[in-house]
Image: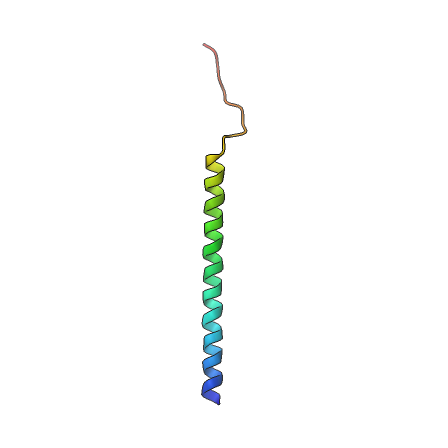
Length: 52
């Protein structure tokens, strides 16, 4: 019984670690996608065109 309890605690801790890492990775992917989206959109700032 004690071995089963220790095993369940170990599995819980492993699952929690995998969950945390997957959330971090998902956050990085979303951040990268947002940056890529910003880079692909034209800038809203007016361009500085000077006549010579």
